Image (cartoon, rainbow, N blue to C red; front, side, top):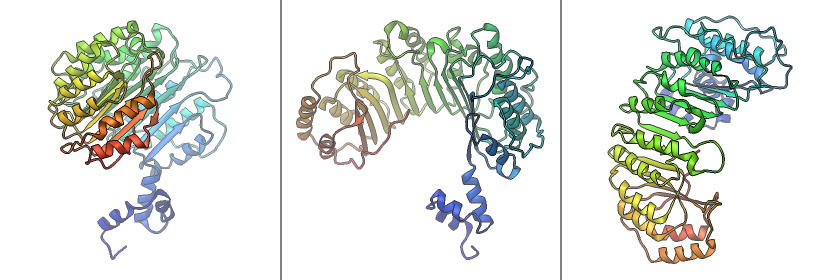
Length: 461
């Protein structure tokens, strides 16, 4: 180790697999710290995991807890007896108490015993170790399918300290909240939990948060969460994946204000507001379509965004929403993803023309009904600097499909006569009905696009 500078060793270890790194963890302090940092950089504490007790004991060590950079807390029921009626502490009571202790900088010494724990017991133990995790940069809280026998009425109203006191998460940059199923009873009084407990916590962190993600797969109304949030002065990325018809059913204006007030700093936006249910009905999409149209009508909306991932609905006005998004962010946009909506050939060609106003666009993800040489002609003409193109091809089940083999054969014949010599496209991925496109068609495309080097880009959820 003395013969090479540390910088060289850091470069060398970049080629180590995780197993290689763990095998040399006992060589010296350099490899020990490197291996331990790698091993405990991301930790998931899952109340449904049989090993949760051992994990809680392990992370109660200050030397391990301080290495955690991303913490994922999954709270969901396990096979256990229902709590006694006289108990007034809920799962979220324990979680709120833990976060309160973090901000006060206090921690009790956790017991190393591996006595049986119910969910409340596991959360109680988590309370004791959370204050030790001072290096957390990304904190994700997932509440999953909590049954009604957990008491959610009596929350510690003192769990959150005043917002003016800076919380003890000095390194926290990303906050993720995820809700699933019926975590709260369908009682208006229960929604005070969001305002009284969760909102002050989010607000206290808002000045330092650079990434804020909210996912909901529940019928829970999150209107009060968005309505009471202050501006996020440092926010650079956000992901909002919620069912519009239930998640903001009382008042969706808070979500719009959140996006608009963050427009000065937002660079990366994922917004998917698809209503609940599998069948997309026009009546169900009308409210979210109107809301999106109102939101993007403001020129400031997405004005500094570089990466936009959006579901515009399947209504005719959805195309106008896409055009407006492009108009607002065309100077900065480098990546554009359209979700859930399949475009007709003429719609894709028209959208390509609109995207030609984006000089920095390098990545495009679209869903289109079927492959057409007209679409590739338009992309090559309008988007010469495009580097990554991802296409999902396939007729929705409600549409009458054409003969796939005949359609692809016609497409291949059309493409054999084309050479896009000035197109800079480097990577092309095409999926058809959930599967990779056949190799014959992809090879035809490679001959038509000489710059192509890869078919390997993967789709993201």
